[in-house]
Amino acid sequence: MNTLKLEIAAVTARIVVEEGMEYGPAKRRAVKQMGLPGRTALPDNDAIEDAVIEYITLFCAETQPGELLALRRLAWIWMQRLAAFRPHLGGAVWHGSATRRSDIYIQLFCDDCKSAEIALIDHGAQYVARTITGLHGAPVEALSLNVLCPELNNMAAIHLLIYDHDDVRGALRPDAKGRSPRGDLAALARLLHDQAT
Image 1: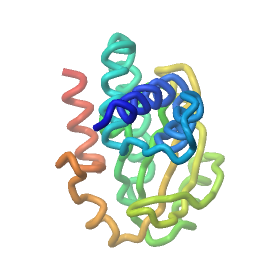
Image 2: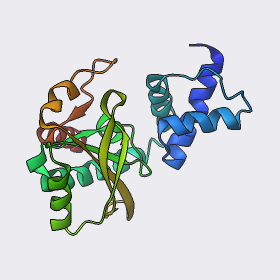
Image 3: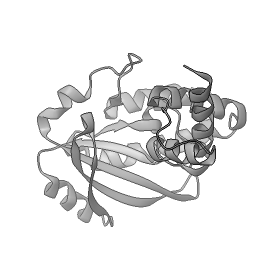
């Protein structure tokens, strides 16, 4: 990767970690902060993730592991509540690069957005329904809620992305780095066990 892309990745990583911004908007802000033209070639998300991990290692090594554990435990609670919908954790909380400002992304595979909404209502959760970009760049229904993360003593955003029941097969294909892009309750339990020991 060229030097300019590495510089963009480093600035983007700082924005992602310090402000909790998603990769796409953080890249655009980095380009603007650096005074570069809007059409500047951007680093890919794998390069951003590498830069985020490097930033965390340098500046957040003492706090990030505890923050990640707290977010994973919160994800576990909500995945248990929504177990009927085959929940899978993804994003930075799954991959291990999350900090206290990171959002939690849980994919639900259930065919019916309304049944997931009813489950949230049954749990007394207030949410906002919207459409966002999901798997393979396709639009997907998302239910977003803000909940208290007691271990961090602050609010955390949880996004529940609703997919068809059978979409889980394609959702588990390894990513470009050969990793599973998301994990179910059993996989998250293993991560939590490994992190605690």
